[in-house]
Image (cartoon, rainbow, N blue to C red; front, side):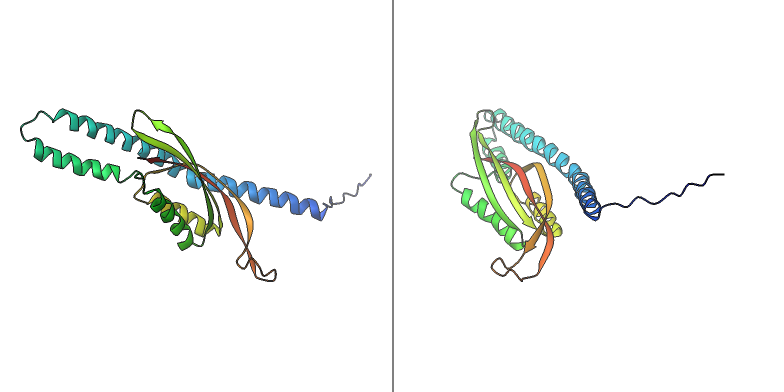
Amino acid sequence: KIYMKIEPIKLNPNFKMISSGIFYVTFFVFVTYLFLYGSIKEIKKTSLDIIDKKAKTEFYFESIKSNQDFSKKMGAINNKIKTIDGLFIIRDKEIDFIKTVEDLASNRNVKQSISIDNVALDAKNKYRKVAMDLSVSGSFEDVMNYIADIESLKYYININFVSFSTSIINNNLGDLNAPQKQGVSGIIKTETYWQ
């Protein structure tokens, strides 16, 4: 009988650390995708519903112009249009909208920068579709709460893309000895409609 001695394979500690890091980052991205997929799908559906309701309201407005009780129906329609128009950023009120988004980030301890890209006037809806990229960093919980706050704003904001990665957060930028903690940083690509 011949016996063979089998020795366990010894892995390099650096390989173990890199492979476990890759595994955790991949797992985190997968979980984040699963978490946000339903919300993004629902936001896109709501986006189409809002535009459809606006078009129907404007059609209804045009159809009752010749009606006898024009003033009563006009008041009801104006209220509906004001409600729908309140979802869009009004011309000359863009700064208020940006300040609102900045205040949300500040309240949630999320660092952010905003990049706004104007797109031509949408002839069908008479609104400018504006792409807005939000670069954010903070704790995972704070960033998720910040996204929830954005979704609950009275303004119409369509979140098209979310990408995060882990990062180290230093609360005192000038002090190298300040405690650091792990967080997330990433980008949120959104669209808004401006009147």
